[in-house]
Amino acid sequence: MPPRTHVNPSRSLRDRKKERTRRVIQAEALRLFAEKGFDETTIEEIAEAADVAPRTFFRHFSTKEEVVFWPVYRPLLAGLMAARPDESAVQALCHAIVDGLSAFYDQDRERVLDRIKLAFRTPALQPRLRQEQATSAQAMAAVLAQRLGMSPDRLEVRAMAAAVAAALWVAVEEWQAVEGQVELGPLIDRTLGTVLAGEHATYGANEAP
Picture (cartoon, rainbow, N blue to C red):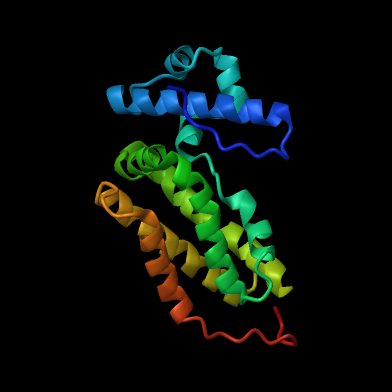
């Protein structure tokens, strides 16, 4: 059975076809990683299993690592935060993360779990995992800074973004550690709630960034 694809009617047919192809490639790659191991699986084998040419693989993913770490929620953060104008910046960010992840988690739970388990349990992927954690914090700093009208390099913005990103990754790590036996949403709510409970910094409009 082909993987389900989240359909957004506002997107072009071309974009939807590209996303379907990405998902097919990713599904076959994850299957091969589970059967053969990440290191032992070649891009040529993934392309063959997905019934595409290797050059098609590279049009969608630059490396095998990208298949595992294909970001799904980060591009949505700014829009999801903008939909919450009455919340504080950090509250809006936390809720945007939950909203963004739920759109993909609800339709692809097992594949999301497989990707996360692979990321945390494959030694060859550990450098990329740390890079993804840092990239998440940078992306969150950018959307927080936009909401606050501040520089993303400001210490307080970076610190709060790092705290939110760390809370998210703690939840994700716990979820894969227990083999998905508890739902990811409540874990994220718990860890992000810890950050929100400590949200007390005041951003003075006249302070130097």
